[in-house]
Amino acid sequence: MNIPNNILIPEIGRLIQQGHTVTILVKGFSMRPFVEHCRDKVVLARCFNVFVNDVVLAKVEGGQYVLHRVIEKDDNRLTLQGDGNLTSTEHCLTSDIVGKALGFIRKGRKREDRTDGVKWKIYSFVWLHLKFIRPYVLAFYSHVWLRFIERNNYCDEN
Amino acid sequence: MRIKDGFELHEICGEFVLIAQGVENIDFNKVVSFNETSAFLWKEAYACDFTSEDLAEKLCEKYEVKRDEALQDVDALVLQWKKAGLLV
Image 1: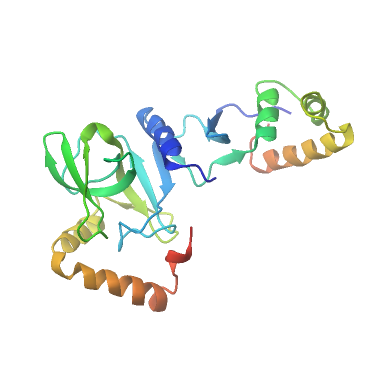
Image 2: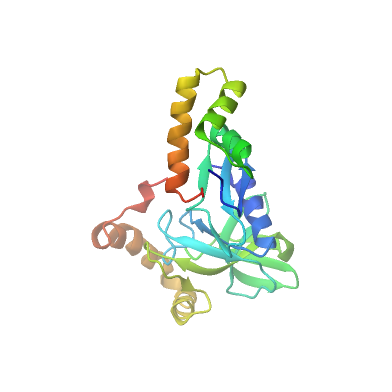
């Protein structure tokens, strides 16, 4: 299925509002290095409360949908940033959230890495404190790790 | 034959996807997608007993297709539905 996000995601939002959790394939590179384009899936659920460091699928300024981390919260205004984005941020309201990430199913595994689990928390803590060396880590990840160690270049997939 | 209860056909931008109701998690990577013709046959077959011949007849009424070809296509589709566990 190749359905545009502006049509598919409201449908996903409707199912989430009905109380389902929804699993979708992640597309895009902005949540690297933990979440990889066309390799990993995200499990989304209804968002009752949002906190800094939560990962949300939301409609941001310009009408685009992004799956990014909340880096600032001011009342109902949120600032989002992809883990793999060094400078660019997005803004939205809490009412623009379609769903909150409960976990990620990575590398074809059956079990998800939950966002309330130790692994995600350690990753988040480390990544958020590596701000100044993130460009080097990301460059190593995409040019060395994916090509020579994991031997998968997900950049080529659509 | 009969379609199992608990499935809902959703139309999203001209694409049809079958989503199991009552399931907590909906995995969009595992949903069954239908084209327009198979969605039409699903709607015709839903909530009633049917045979391949019944569906072939519906197909001939809706589209300009020879009965033999229609029956062949319906048999192939019904086989797929059976394999996917959608029929009882």
